[in-house]
Length: 303
Image (cartoon, rainbow, N blue to C red):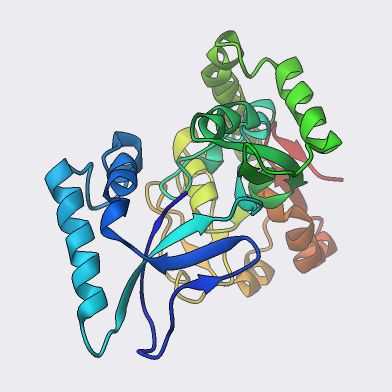
């Protein structure tokens, strides 16, 4: 397996570099076929500033790598990453199963375009002579997978954790198109629930604020059509965001201390994956009867 890595390093660095799993080495002219197989793929180049390459462009890239190797002093290194026969690779990515089951549509934004399942990744790996042999389930981004992979012929034994996850995804229907058909309707139901909460709060004369001026919250608020008439302000600890407004909804962003002045009746936790931390940080809102609200996968006021 080869991947391109460009970096500035001290001129004294010596290649190749070996680890128990990998070899990092200079590209060779003989690598052209492998490089082009990677760089010519539409799905590889989709979010990059180059490609998909023509054969001539891939050849030009290899020739450029070789020219860099001849420069003195050498400061640029494009290295081939080669997996050893018994080596292991790890990949970490948001798990599609959690996104669907928990309606985590607010995690879909410019930084997070990939939501993968073991089912999908395993097919890609096996098509290129690799296979998974172990997996860890992580809480990151609302539920992620850390997948351990190796060459098909490597000695790594498949773990029970991997077999269990494969069965879980099959039971959830991730291999069936109908599983995905109702997702849009479930997203709309989440938004309806939140809009109903805001309407009730407004009718009761209660002030609603929010915490977390991040991408996840912006995605959620804009999908729900929220404006500053619905949420009076949002709190965020990042000084670079304070004094500005959320894009789309135009809700003003303030430092967390502002909550003591506004004393809102409700604080909506937009980064729901940080719920426990935020509840601890702003626990004092209970002094005036303030309560926390989460809106995923349904809107509920926390006890």
